Length: 264
Image (tube, rainbow, N blue to C red; front, side, top):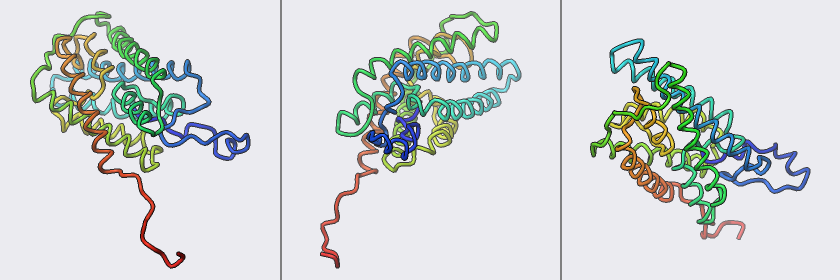
């Protein structure tokens, strides 16, 4: 869920000792092979979807109150996501989200630090496969059919607007933290944002194309009908573009002060 955290690399002293360059904020940790990063993205996305779907099933079995169901679902997601980012962030950056990966690739191609096109080609399939695997795993744990297309229609326009807002806010948060060198706060900040967006967005904040695809495979509380998936993904990508635009406007990189000083 986060742009790659440079804190996951070796300590500064160790890096300088061997003469290796220090990665810039948002850069992929140089010591993790691409296969390890792909495995981390697969595992993290699978675990995230398992948390979302599994806690939704558990909630519906414990209460018929929809508000309590959503509360339980959101709390489990907050804690699960925070733990996964803290654990896997030093390996892959803990994207778990094609929107984040594509946004980071865009910033890299614009001269910033981030993943390459080759890495995107590995990250995205790992995230999507992980999301599907996580939904199947959650269904298996609760005795549900392993694959049953969701019948939960989410095609209304106001829900798509909610996805634009949720994804834009997520991208703004992640890349704003990267621009201000505060990615160490990502586990708490990103998890807290998603938890709040469960409640302030009409769509309950999917904000993630891979998770959206995965949740189509389960006909449970957290599911989404396959017919609603393309529009949701389109709204999420639009939200990612809005988020990047906001980052560019708000977090302007400092430039040299042209004014004369006493030392000049």
